[in-house]
Length: 218
Image (cartoon, rainbow, N blue to C red; front, side, top):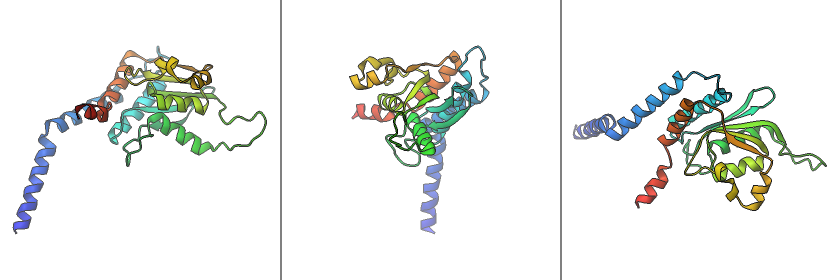
């Protein structure tokens, strides 16, 4: 009987905490509002990259709901317009993986599926991705940018800038090898509506580098 009362007391405290804690309640409400904005958004045909921008934003929302960072990405066949692969941030799904940013997850999935073998034949290039365009919801970080370059992606579009951590806008600071390797690439901001860009930014900022903020407080 005493044990049951203690367990009941713990249960009541837990329920009160989950329902009344202002931080948790605010985050849940904020995420619900973001989901409503994504689901109600209508593609603006005056912006040519809006359809793919919305796709990666939806992937970013899914990543957030799984407990990871709010970034999504996809690979598009430039000739057919078909999306050939999706990816999203999975750093905390199901366990911590420091490498699983959205672009890394996307390229892992694509390369694991197509399995380009090293044929050692003259003229054969496993980095031949001329027909592929990578679209991501946020400007790639240094890790992801060098992976994109190394994968052979010639065209990469991002919906919104990452002013604190993005590397595309700072490509002149890449080491000489990577800067020269990327000389023929077309990496730029996607042509998406201001509203969609704001949604992408808000999804990103929902979970924006809390680990770094926590470190600064120590």
